Length: 189
Ligand code: ADP
Image (cartoon, rainbow, N blue to C red; front, side):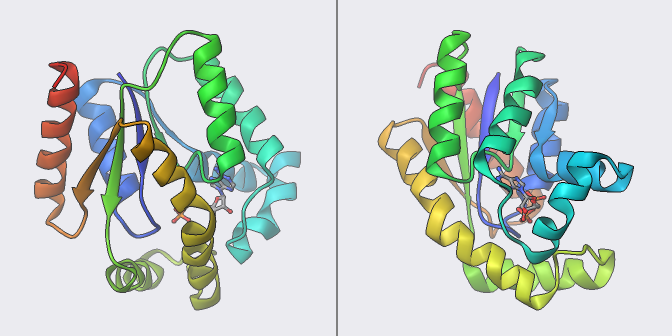
């Protein structure tokens, strides 16, 4: 299965992507995790992206596309989390998957209001202290989601492969709705 999960920061995307990866036995490819690991390693890439992550800005498209191209070339199936975030990234993803003849099977959109998203991110900031969970970075990340990533959401909706799931339900109910959607895809519904 090749699954893309979309949704704003605080929608529960990472949590649900991990559960999907486990249930469907596919790797969880999370660009935020890849970038944070690079920062923690002190690699050249890490040094380059660290200030961008801290501000809650976006890493340049060409860098992200290069990273994803390498990572996805290694995998048959995946649940992709955090990419694409811009139209240019979405176009690059579609063309790289088309080149290798492995289109997406499903796109899941987790929908939550900004109020719920902000509340969850503040709670996570208190618990985990992620560098980009400062109030300014949270505002910036949500703004960029609405400005840029919602165009990606519209693109997959137009393509007719997007399933909307209410992300304000309990974690288990969200996962049940995702499983339902993925079973529909597998059955060709
Ligand atoms: P969140 O969705 O909560 O912002 P992520 O862990 O997905 O968290 O991403 C953390 C940060 O990594 C982003 O704010 C951004 O700086 C960078 N990043 C991750 N994925 C991408 C991407 N596809 N394009 C550009 N920057 C990205």
